[in-house]
Length: 390
Ligand SMILES: Cc1cc2nc3c(=O)[nH]c(=O)nc-3n(C[C@H](O)[C@H](O)[C@H](O)COP(=O)(O)OP(=O)(O)OC[C@H]3O[C@@H](n4cnc5c(N)ncnc54)[C@H](O)[C@@H]3O)c2cc1C
Image (tube, rainbow, N blue to C red; front, top):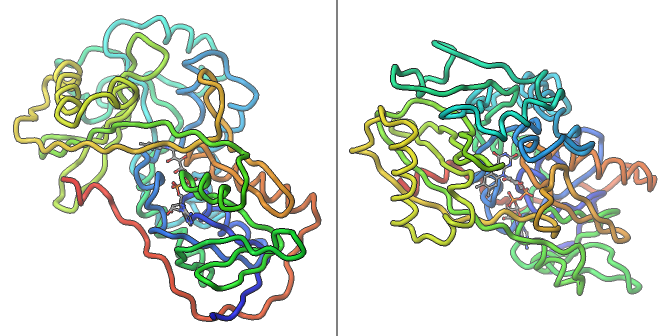
């Protein structure tokens, strides 16, 4: 039987939410242990598009709500962290783009008009033309309007690597995770037979959280999965583009981010409406055909005859909610010692950590003294998942 461990905060799930929280708590002097059963960042996080939203995309769906003001502050917080002057030192994390763009391919669509009616958005958006356009759109045949959003795009594998570094010795690879009950109450978890006691336990396991809750006999908070069918295309003719391309509806017709590949090319990762319900219903060949058609219409000057294509099916894990509302702040629920949540967006990881820090402060949970951790098996850190697909 491996020896028992005690810590202040035990975190289950090392995606961006758990890793960010772990680094923040360590900075505050808490002892932590973060356990993951897979690779760090290898769930939704590395498969995200890495956009640090400021809420502008969501303003397309209507007025900005109070909650979307929390997201409005995320680009500033991440920018400060990237400069080494924020709540975490993220120097060395690769910034792929200093801006994300809104791209209206034809005449101004109705939704764009109402979008610009929002004062909060107007102040953060500026039109770009000529050589200020994203490189992929600088072509004589390009017709349309492009607006620069004060949002960032990050290279997620380098972000995960840095957050894993900030975790120091607090990482544990663990497969079998069971409740550790003492006097009928949750005292910690038993991880591959090792008892780990903690003042607070956080579940931040993305799509794996429902299963962890079930092991505790809990159904709440309920989770939902939103399936996506993303498309990847790699070609030597591609130049970087980070943009939401607007269609007629409230959601972007296509969201493009660009990622460097090991062989020195650019890969476009395509989400937005293309990857949602109709895209989910298509098989891989159908989804690639749909993406080819979109790009032939939107960027006909880019020669993709030699391009390599792939698709990726991935679920977003979020708290259950009504079909219409879209989460635009981090979610946290509490049951005694247990805190359970989803950031709902990579960009909102700081907000997720804020909520947990506030709960600890409210409950008077302070760093305590614990024996040093024994040598523990460490989970592997994820890399660029696209290298295995194309
Ligand atoms: C295609 C796509 C594009 C996206 N694009 C963006 C974007 O551009 N910007 C943005 O802000 N957000 C984006 N998101 C959302 C964002 O990716 C997620 O909100 C965020 O990554 C969730 O992080 P997480 O740490 O909660 O979960 P995850 O990254 O899924 O991490 C969960 C971790 O928990 C571990 N785990 C699971 N079950 C267990 C268990 N039982 N025991 C131990 N460990 C376990 C997993 O191994 C994993 O490491 C996107 C999502 C998708 C799917």
